Image 1 (cartoon, one colour):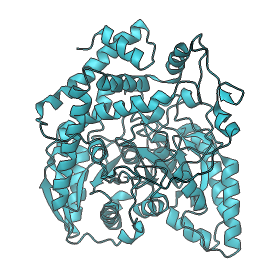
Image 2: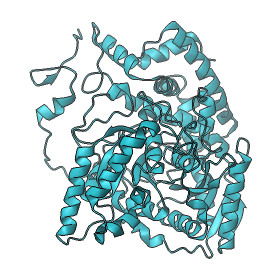
Image 3: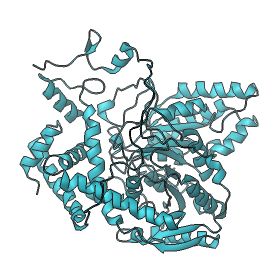
Image 4: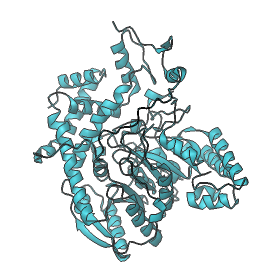
Length: 488
Length: 93
């Protein structure tokens, strides 16, 4: 019963010592999905046959005395925007309801070659546009901590599955906070890697200059282990970085002695819940107590990030989503002529938020508005990056809230602009391409988890993991489990 | 200010067909969203280069080697309609 609560590294030990088998572990998770996911609704598709076959293969390897990878035999879930060969990949859209990709995404290949066990594909906001998972064309996912709350989004299924112990870890994608905000809302570790660290090959594109795949895990060690498996150069993604990737677990030494940590004052302004702010300041104080040098600093262009992002991301989306025309895959609506077919297919296939972003993006790119909106936003993006460059000349890492509030209440999120404003803490790091990690840090008075965000310089994931691990080793506030009775 | 006519033009460019009611909703929402974007005008960006991409990567090249092609049937496996080994669409001209 309690097996499903364990982390990757704990389960790896039990597998290698033959205390448990991979099949037993997979079956426990599949059983839990059958009994509990009827309430949580994290999974769009459960791939029980695949999981059991993969688990059996791992058990054979163990029986043969082979050394297995840290992720071997560990059950996981994939956000449904990552292509899985022959297995439905819907992006939670009616547009791709019956789409079965002809190939695996690079990250899926990597998890398979590490002998991971795929439990299934999990829910999200349609085409990753949203922050509640209420924009799924299929159903809303609940927050395992409180079923009246959203799990966050767009990787809400990825977060809910791990928080409810329906997967040991999951992969999400993050364009403006879509890994970190759901991780914060569900009490998990979520890491958006540096742009270019993880291949986007086979990730269904939303905004290509911002999208990045990363892990949602139960602790910091697990995040490092998943990064070890998924990071790396891939010639099929022309924006993939061709550098030497580190062993991310090497950073987990528990020490922050002498590290320089900045608290950017702009992240504590209007709209930030005082209870969230208090937890972030408590985490900063803890780091100081542990020997870090903590100082207030400034990222002066922060307030311009949200407007710049909501011009750039929809512009890229309007272009990327041009491919859904009913010709080669996905939905096709019948019409007399080809233009009619395009229009009717897109009308029926896309939900409201997707249409809104396509409209916004097309407007910002259209003749007469391009310079005032899209080009201006790209210049502002440069200023935001320059803010970070200046900050990281002085600091190893910055500490901020992940989201202005804890989990939002379900069914009360109809104002698009209000939701966009909820992304203010996560968006700047996507625009600058830098890594960012959300770490759970205590609960608010509603007994919901608070997320603390750590920001680092490009390819500075080791520093983020180091700081997060030090916090994790020195306080129980990072080890949170839903058990309050309102959810699980 | 985004008028109904602008919304209709953008919808046409986006290959979306909006009902009259939807046009009104989009006009109102786009106006509200773009109002918040107006603060960008406060920043002086003269002489600032636009940043389309964060990585200092340009012209990524690879060897021009013949690779494996996906078989035609597999390429067509998701086609809503196909004929003679090709994607089929309604008559264009």
